[in-house]
Image (cartoon, rainbow, N blue to C red; front, top):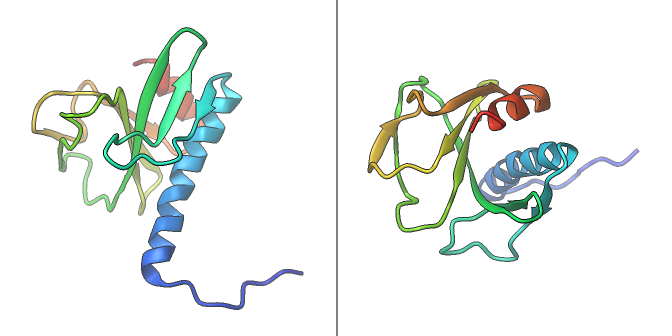
Length: 131
């Protein structure tokens, strides 16, 4: 049976974990019927995932946070981008939030326009469809 016998550097390990959250979103959206595209390079465009229903395209940014509470304030790093949706996953819990793009420089994660989900496909898609 395969076993990983090498050590993974901590920075690399964090990148692997963060990418795994992006892969979850890709999988869930594909299972929901979306066309999903992954940019070869998203440096400067702040787009991790591009989705389409055919005629329409939407840019998605996926972020992970070490959640201390759901009312923690997040900084808007997407003002100059064309991102439509930001998805936050709590690395140390089983919840996340789906945020439509917003203009303010800061906003609480649990703002009334943000959609909280439990980290599973059914709950994620239920909240994603509410955007």
